[in-house]
Image (cartoon, rainbow, N blue to C red; front, top):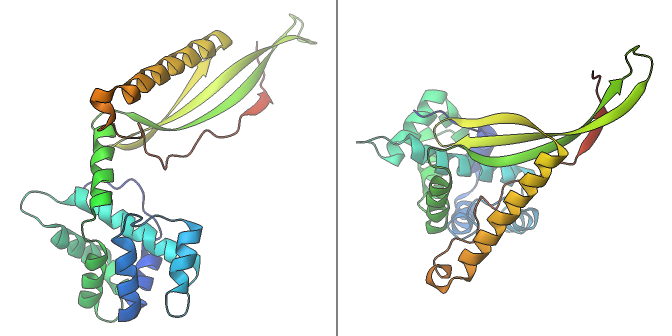
Length: 242
């Protein structure tokens, strides 16, 4: 099987799926087969919880949705020639012992899970777009920055003559085959200016494409995954220097 990038609280999610009533299962099926699919949104999950017997906690539903998303996307990547998605999921549950989390009848629980993992057009579009955006190349998915002040001491090492600011930029990249990798680079003020110009140039190019009537109608709305987190806050620290 292919290497997985991220394993959410799968056991907790499966335990909930295996415990719900048939009536609640129908409510869940309707929810995950819509355009929101496995989206974890507090208001959405709160509304969904109110429709279920016993009104489970939002956290419990988020575990279930995370597990379903994990199996939907990663499970389809595990499928090799001559196999079916259903066979791969069943084998994975049996091999890992996770089938025991699906209730007293693992076979029935597995069928419940597979019903919740039925192909969804919205998710299939997302899955194919993810492949087109990442493919076999490293794709930047997260960024973080840190401003470092490096002191220049006098030759006697008795006082600081000046501070040299330096930007540390962390870039997390991802590929479908190799998961995530972290790269840390250093930028001077001049380098930061060049980077900003490059990003502005990219923005202008994307704007031209979005305004071009020949391609605008079929242009994907986002270049990257809309769920990707933004930059982290910038910090400042002093570090011993030469």
